[in-house]
Amino acid sequence: MNRRVLVCVLILLTGVTSARCGDLKRSTLMSATLHRPMPYTVYLPDGYDGGAQRYPVLYLLHGAGGDETSWAEKGDIKAKTDALIARGAIPATIIVMPGCPASWWVDGAKDKAETAFWTELVPTVAERYRTIETKAGRLIAGFSAGGYGAVRFAMRYPDRVAAVAALSPAVYADAPPAISAARTQPPFLGADGHFNQSAWDALNYPRLVDSYLSQPQRVPFYLASGDHDHFGIASETAALFGRLSSKQPNLVEIHVSDGDHNWNFWASAVDGALRYIYKFAAKPQPALRTAQVQGPINSSSR
Image (cartoon, rainbow, N blue to C red; front, side, top):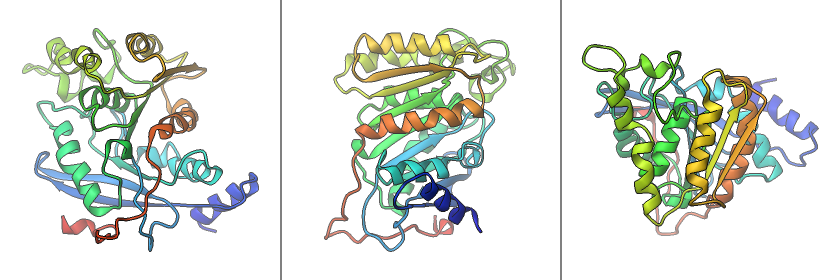
């Protein structure tokens, strides 16, 4: 019995009346910004192949030591998404999990990951898959450095993002602790190869929060952290919640529960995160009759 069939059987055994099991596919785009291929894993919902509907798309960002396989292999995102869709907790959706290791999803000295994400990945996904290309059709979530990236994207592009979820986000308002990967990774290093506080300050969310709060569009935030996070992220997450709740009290949630900074916590937290952010997402839509809708384009064609 293959994994897809097994997951469908397990969903049925939990009492769901109809199993809806999606597929995971691997692909790449040739990034002119990164000067190399940018790989990604995509989840396509049951019925995508041969259908015509357009779907909301969730971008799941990995952490500092992760890649495009992290959410699928360690977070078991396929089985969790299948179950949530089957129960009606979230709508059928496309999920894109890009890989850009050690980038923190910013335009750093080594990789212009933010530019690659918005000017290459998002348009490529729109070209290859039937996505809803509006603010309501785009969600972003991430863990650790990916949570840091999700927070930044929401604050910098509030007109493009329907909602975000940040799990154990590495959003140190001042300086990252000595054990943080931020102190050894390219975006935050100076010319001497050591951690550069000015680089951290220039790219961190406090630089964006005032401009975000001064404009009218609000992005719902779902924040979660383990109470035993050994990086001290629970208090940093609470500080971010405090900044946001004063201006958008009904559009931010914080959840602190038992857990550390690891996949045991992230895998357990993602269910609530998806349930929250999809409340603000567009539902699947019929394809426009005037549009010629195609399925995924072969990854070698771009």
